[in-house]
Structures are given as C-alpha cells and as structure tokens.
Length: 207
Image (tube, rainbow, N blue to C red):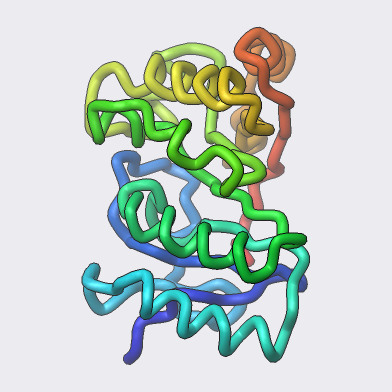
C-alpha cells in the first residue's frame, strides 16, 4: 500500500505527514479505524519528503481544487516541521489565495526546544490547537501526553501564535462517551491566551 499523504474531506484538501504523536487521546479517531471515508491514513513509513507530498498534492488539487488546505492526519503534523514548512511555502507561493491551516496539539515548541511560530508567519494562515480541557488533570486524562508539562506547553503555544498575529483557534472535543467539559472555563482560557474558541462534538463512528 502506498502512503496516503494527501486526501480530501468535505471538499477540502488535507495533508497527512506522519503517524507519530506526543499524545494518545482517548477520543482519537485512529484508535477505532484506519481510514477517513475510505482513505487509509496509516503510513507504511515515516520517510516521505516534501517532494512526495507536493506531488500528491498537485495530483489531487488538479482534480479537486480547494480554497483551504489543512495539515491534519493520523499524527501530529508539526513533528515533521521542516517538511510542513516547505510544503506550506510551496502552496502559498503557487496558490496565494489558498488558506493554509495547521491542526496541532501544540507540543512542537517543546519538542524542538525553540519557538517555531515566527518561521511560519506569512505562510500559515491559522492554527487550530487542541486545548482539550480546562485543567492539567483533565487534559492528562483525555489526551494522555508523553511528557508531564504538556498542558502548559499547549497554552504557551497558543499564546505564541497570538503574539505573532497568526489567527489561532483553541478547540475541545465535547461529549466523549457521555463526558462533559466545563466549556465556559475552556473558552475563558482560550480567550485569555488570545485565541478564538471552538467546540468539536465527538463523532461516535468517526468520518
């Protein structure tokens, strides 16, 4: 099976860079299935280059042009930061009207030991960051991160996006198996960090 690096969903183009992630969220779609609307997103390997992604992107874009491209797949896209940056630059240069969004867990600055956001200014139009909870304890229960200060790092990442004047949305997943979040508290945190707030309803059977 060849690696599906680019796929479509609801008329938009998505880019699936990696299956690696620093979280193991209990509500993650990939815990229950291997595809999105029949498009297999488990990669055979992690060796794909920006050239590989661009090639698949062009093939899909010419069939289904999209006004928005989203870096979001079965892993954390910012873990392949250099590939993401190169692909995003290519798309922004060739299709400047295209909006580029990155869906991320907000751990990349911690993993890379530096603030990556300034390098993406004028390339990425919006970050959607998984805030997921109103407290560290709840975050750890839902997101099962691989390092201890993950929740604080998420909040730092959101603020870093705001500080660079890049649009940022803090999101939570509501209703997982009957569990409910304090949405007012989550929204307050998001707004204090300079982010918009989005509630994503848990999809029982995924896409």
